Image 1: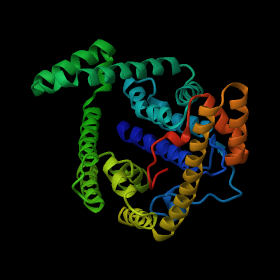
Image 2: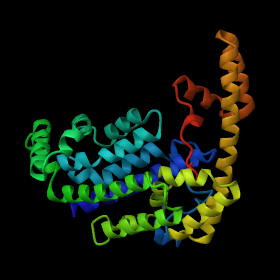
Image 3: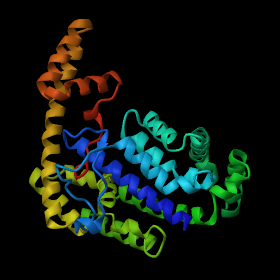
Image 4: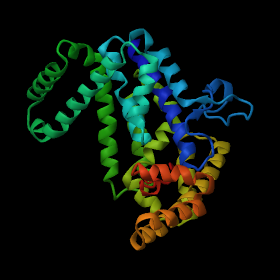
Length: 343
């Protein structure tokens, strides 16, 4: 039961992250540090649980929302190392989704669990060390027999976590990892699959999800179309095929994928409008980056900064200051990979 509750918590938080960063990517003027209250599928009648927030609904700061959800789903067992370790993927999602991700996550953690925050951070840092060790030693581990590999893994786990390793890598956790690995292996295969169509890739993707999660504690994932679609649109070979299409063909293909994944027609129409906004935003952003490059090459010092300030204001108006702060932090939003159907 505990693992199911933890899985639900991961879903609730990931939904929050997806909503915030989708609106940021689409060029919405919504404050990226706020989020509308969560709405359940039952209350919206939507298959995905996604609904357009009403204008008179209060806007909740995203940090407050996450603090509340962490307390709600993790609070009773947060002193256990297995629960602390379960927050690992959530932390990584935040770090990968915003420039100040690590600081933001630690602040949320300290508000949610002030007495245990430092301990939780140390647990997650040990997991970082464990995963780095895995990556560095994968060639050696892959040459071992199953028994040898298992012994090597447990030796490292106990070296880092002592007796807590047994709690973190319980049977339930190992079963969850096995299911995750199965999906990851399929995604790695699809990532390199250049001789199959998008439709065939989608079929393989949906089949492995059903085979892996049907009847498992994570079965609820099968009904979370926004998350599943985001993952599918992140596959390199899918993006390569979409990029080769004309804009109209590409939108038709994206709409078809969403339809096959269970989105309703009104939802597809709404997402198509958001795609159009994103396309326009990327067009503007890429033109800005071209002109920015020319300014950097031609000018230096105060003159360069003056030219860049004028350029940002010309392209982004009210957002110019935000773009400036991002660039001072060495973050350039339009140098990120473009994923059609996602950002």
